[in-house]
Amino acid sequence: MRITKTAQRTILYVVVGFIGIVFVFPFFWMVLSSFKLNRDILAIPLRFFPPEWNWTSYIRVFTAYPDFNFPRYILNSFIVTILAVLLCLFFSATSGYGFAKYRFKGNGLLFTVVLATIMIPFQAIVVPLFILVRQMGLQNSYAGLIIPESLTAFGVFMMRQFFYSIPDDFIESARIDGANEYAIFGRIGLPMANTALLALVVFHAQWVWNLLIWPLILISTPEMVVLAQGIALFKGGYNTPYPEQLAAGVIACLPLVILYLFLSKYFVQGITMTGLKG
Amino acid sequence: MRKASYSVTRLQRHGYVFILPTLIFFSIFLIYPIISAFRLSLFEWNLLAPKEFVGFKNIIKMAGDPRVLNSFLRTIHFSAVSVAAINILAFIFALMLGSRLLRYKNFWQSLIFLPVVLSIVAVGVVWEFMYQGTGILPILLRKIIGVSPAWLTDTRVAPYAVIIVYVWKSVGYYMVIYIAGLLNVPVSYFEAARIDGAGFWAQLFYITIPTLRNTIALAMVSCIIFTFGQFSIQYVITQGGPSRSTEVLSLLIFREAFRLGKFGYASGISVLFFLTLLVFSLIQLRLFKSGAIGA
Image 1 (cartoon, rainbow over the protein chains, first blue to last red):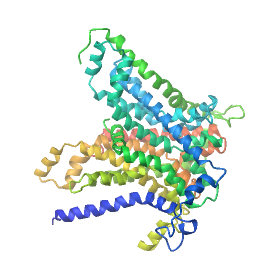
Image 2: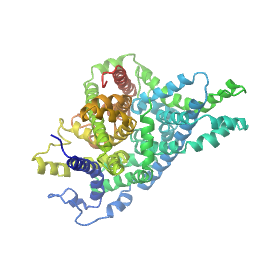
Image 3: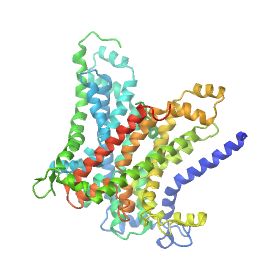
Image 4: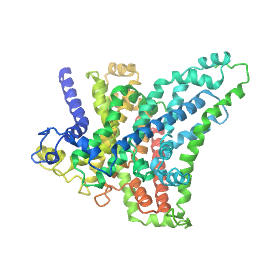
């Protein structure tokens, strides 16, 4: 027996629609609940929409808790994310270009070594890394957060794949015109790579912005706490009301959701460029 | 490629300059620490008193420590279930979104992808809230099927509560990988198969999956690596509880080192963690190379 095309299509839309709702619902629920009063938030019977819309949780997150300094956490997160991403771009673009465009001795071997570091998960090295960074005197510093968070073999791999795919002719002709190697990289290589670089920006920004374990380990002074860590402490420390926890959560999600709305193409590209082409 | 007449080898040496910064920083902050973990596991050290060499004492202690065994098994369980669920769902979703019957593909894709970009700590907060006794999940479940487990307090259920959050957060990422992979399968394969009378399942098992073998292998291996180290969800939602039922290795390492000050012992657990992951990733790659899956 054959099912008609229309029936197939209807079933598909129902299933995909249901899945879509399931995947969006928790975020939707977070936003909705953050506008509820504490007494309504876990009330029985369930109140789906806020009986009265309440904005004060968003203000109280910033003002009502003297032990928590959320403006500072947000600032720290932005500083760390922006600098770690820039540093990641620098490492990935330079070495990706070097590996892709020069045939020096040991190229293959060194690239394999860099790529093999994918097998070293961050959680497996936090203990020795902490000891090392502490010995360098970088505990409770931006540098201590930024440097380890800027290293990713995925980025190197991705940029190498990209530079591999662009023809050498551009470089050769610039050489014949007498340009030096670094000028060629800056004026020809980098501008061609802007799509790949943007993909790397969104890909890596998301990782750094959300990373919890490293700040949790490295940072013990209140003024250096980053947002993810701040929320985890905010949730764990007090008997914090849910609307305020959720409001803080929404604030933490917003920058990346906005970035995603504008650059969703690059999010997808970043993933496919690292995920494919073994 | 045409070779230029000027000094080629000297020119190629510029490559070293380009890769040097990366090599230096990767060596110091990634490669040295993993070697250092092996060395530190032979010491007893709380960072304050001088390091004391204890040989294999930590390793022997680990072998008999029920807490390490528990975390080891919890990690394997969490990873096995999550990796299987994520990849199967991601693959099914990719097939559905790839269907010619479906329109507005980008819209559907972005809905499923949304959790990937959300802050993981915020995600932990909202799921913990939804799992509460009077939260929306138990209420809905009681309405629909009549019962709801005690999500965060039952030791048999809590590991799955964490897995659900992690799978929900990650599926979109792997779905995108599979969608891109599916686009790379030449349409002519399917056309030829259809002419030969192959149905949906035949096409799936004889064309789609074999052609996507490399994509599947890479998605699985990177998924294993990410999943093994998962820390934030357990830290935020369950803190490893109830009764350590969600205390995965990364959480144990964190606690032994940074709460109890046992840096040597925690390094030993890190080595165990790293080697286990390495073995699993290599087995995985071997399986795909030898063609145990697909064609």
